[in-house]
Image 1 (cartoon, rainbow, N blue to C red):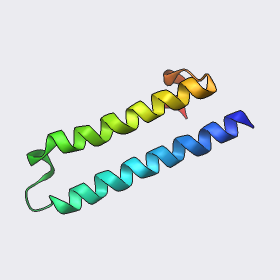
Image 2 (image 1 turned 180 degrees about the vertical axis):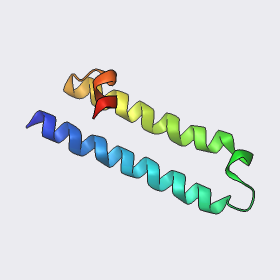
Image 3 (image 1 turned 135 degrees about the horizontal axis):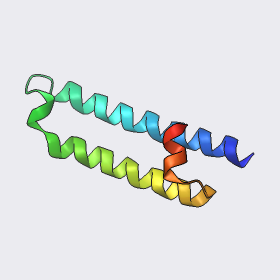
Image 4 (image 1 turned 90 degrees about the horizontal axis):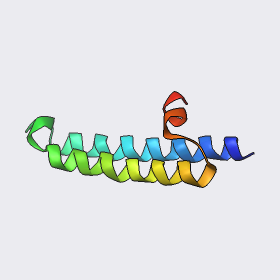
Amino acid sequence: MSQEQFRKEFIEILDESNAESEALAKKYFKDGMDSHPAEFKAIRDKHFKRVQALCLKYGVKPEEAKKE
């Protein structure tokens, strides 16, 4: 159960991260993605912290989460 719940929550985080990045990319499509690196980094950092917290919650090493 806990591994299944971990995967579910992990996928939710990835989906949210992808959606935010995609929305930002569409917003800045004319400027080019490289013109706003700080905003994309903020999205990555926010979701990375969420993944770290999730790993701690379920006792999963981050290296193992990368394999998932």
